[in-house]
Image 1 (tube, rainbow, N blue to C red):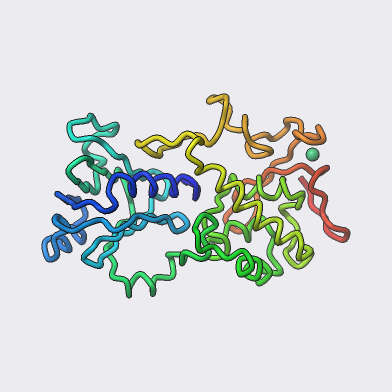
Image 2 (image 1 turned 60 degrees about the vertical axis):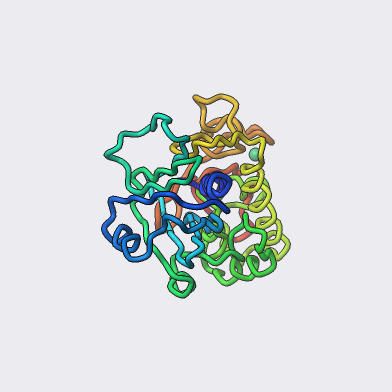
Length: 285
Ligand SMILES: [Zn+2]
């Protein structure tokens, strides 16, 4: 599952290649999209902008429509020059958008829909911009309130809720808890207000650092690329705890622990030494 930073990079690359430019061709293997295009041709319209909302990618067209896509596990958007060889077979193509300079290909994108501004605003799957940790409109104060509303849940699970802090995926969940010294299994009601603030700030900082210009952006985006690693064969090489079970904690040397957490059974990594539970809590790991 791509994390928020990956979607953000994809949106940025697509925005650079398409925003403000006229669409010259649109194709899709999805009947609903081609029917929309038959009625309201996208060719001739401009792409206004491309944005990431949580794990959704939104492409806004000048005619008022918005194409929303979700990659789930295997989908990806690639950007090519005309005549450039595609990195996936044609049979994986679901959507093609062209302008004079570029071709964007959505490969195996499993969810793709056309929306109006109204249907987009009503769609509860799509987080609004204010709750995306990467968006300019992000409101840290309100994010803290949304975390606190889940008093009985464990903090690492709450960070994953896309309607609480959109953009934080499973890797960042563990990393954010580690850098703030918060135990991922701690219930929200046992956190101090200050800790909630620090968690939100760390989520913004860590996810944000992965979308910087020097963090390895390429115009062909996406597809199992490791984030900010020095050693390509080791997914944990540049991470604090994620993927490092049994290895020494980078701060205290205690072995990093790993455990399945939450209703969705997502893997969590943490250091029991650096991230103690508050008194009265107990967790095996
Ligand atoms: Zn430690």
